[in-house]
View 1 (cartoon, rainbow, N blue to C red):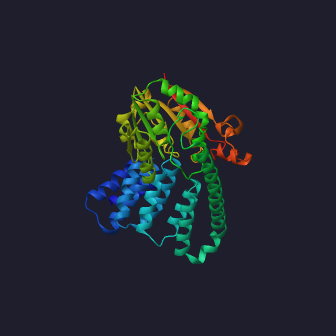
View 2 (cartoon, rainbow, N blue to C red):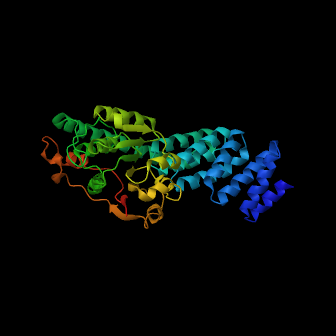
View 3 (tube, one colour):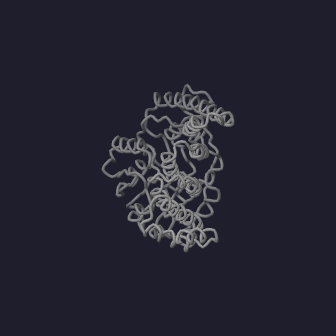
Length: 390
């Protein structure tokens, strides 16, 4: 009876009633198909009511119990999480769904789609290949996308090798210290991403140089670097603000290791605290008056930087990269939260000119190599914001 009421409430869009009835079924000790149906209804009710964390909790439990009926809501929730900037949670949920139903082709296809949208092309290829192994009879329908992804990866690898060769020429001539910008003098490790050479030259994210100086002038005592990557910003701020403790976060283990190594190379390892995921609960105790956030977390900023969840943000200076390219409308939604408490400065991308950068004085480089050396290799529509507390 309760299960029927839960299902009917779901159909009539009475989400709270559906949650109440489905929860009662579970609390009554339902098992087997009754338990699985109750969990599925509960998940759909939370998804429909825009309670992603509650839905995530329910679905994780249902998938752990091998509830095949939870695959559809898991896919729906993963897409919603991705659109909210929570790609990591979306990937984790889909990985659980794949474990639960390894022969369901829809799960790897969604994983491939989301990885492709976020620019993780090798992962997209891997999941399409997984889908092809599950359903060889439909593989031909995906051949065009697969060929395109592989071609993109090949071009990127060639370009990465070219940029790396330019970087080697520059380090052979000038060493490994950043040449200009707010963090000039930071000793870099040789990197393998597209932008490490621009970082070495000192023009990486040149758009932010002036607001970085403004933020440093506030003399923050705590600096939170969300998405620290190899540690350039964490170490740079540690050198420029000797009184501050730097809290650097990244979900990638290799990035965390690189950040620790770079901090030690630059003799600031005692003030750079490195951690994994920076959730709102983790961020809360670190923000407030005297804090600065430097945030580049691939769209997760929409979930993380919410003063309704982390009240201390109302008094925190924030520099944030805005990923509208992945989460449409992100900037408007995010910045609107701070209009009453901060002066909001929107910052657009600017072109690079090697003629005004230190690379212009390095002998033995072609014009194309100098152009490569100052490029950030990013979408020209990318933007940032500086939020200064009023």
